[in-house]
Length: 557
Image 1 (cartoon, rainbow, N blue to C red):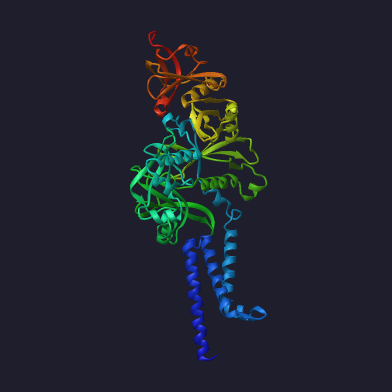
Image 2: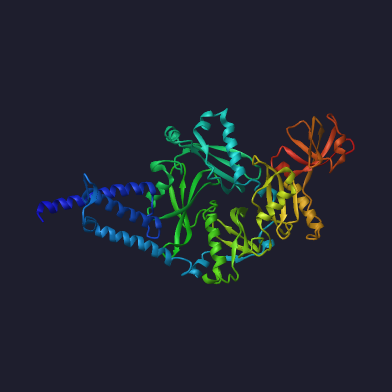
């Protein structure tokens, strides 16, 4: 081989490597694989690089175009691509073998131990929750309220509405100032609107109080410059990849701290078993959504609520429940095998957010054998052995109690009501607005109570507990108060055959009294001075329609 041919060969090799590096760099910038051998994305990235090199080699020196078409020069593929082809085969086989040897069949005990589940006592560990801590809204209802809040700004700030929208994918449930809320950042409407507004950033976020059902747009003095909807260097995923090139990331959640500052909580994913198995979370990177400053914490600050994703926790419990007696037993004998029921929800306790889901035995979809609560910040898991109805059976029971109204039930929360595990649900109309509430006994889903307020619902539920012999003490009376004034407006409506009277005493508040509960409600007219007894809980929720107990002539009182 002449010196000129050797030089040309080296030059061609360098050009092929440079072209591969350029195309591979573009792939890396777009796909953002972690530089980590425990990531399947990294192995795919290596495979793509080798394929790019092989294609470039064939296109530049192995293919010949003539009048008969395109032909491959004999020997070029193997002579010039031998090493890349062998490496590609090694990468492919390595990823396949790595996946197989990391599976549950070889590491059943390790998968079982991913989640440390302790047995708990429900009545002692799950305190009766006060009304002002019960989340009334699910995610769908929160999305509706958030969109309406942004839409209501059209008259006062049309530029805001026209340029931004609410992220339906976010709406993370967190505890904010000891209140259960959902938060979601605004997003740019499209790429053009991003271009027009990128210098100021996203102007704020939506916060929905899940108890009072109020939604507000929080405007920031400085806009959020870093988000999942940004482009180029300010895109959150790209920022994470270039600052933490070897880290694997799982869920990315939008949260706010106690001062209302917006943050992205980016959970770090690790594989604890073999090469790709045993997915778990190890700390999180917190990114300030306004400044882009970031810090990795192995133990996150206590104001952070969501580090471990719900799907990951459910997956880990399913490993724990199915592999309790080994991998073979999980498929054949299934002795002691349990799995989570369909669906999950969140409970706010002790200023943390807990994942709740039911647990059912293998092959039994009709009832639960218990349920689990898992802290989404610390992964502390507790199992409570309580047999009863599945969540969807409870939802059907609640919907059946108001079938004439065609309301749909939200996925239940699990509450402690009078030391009884109880499913609590909101009942929504077709517009996703909460209209009523339902409580269903876990052990006996035939015990189902509904009410237009939480106080009324609980009073009805506790009466049913007594009637069915579940509870022998008198129900705790919901707190009431009275108001005296002159009737300025009366309205009535028939609900389920009962006439409901709405009384106004000169304010924006209406007190609704059922004629079935108080027959005297029908005798009063506008101008009469009356005293109305009502449930305080409704007033604390900020409602303008309060559930009344009775209405009486003020002179008699």
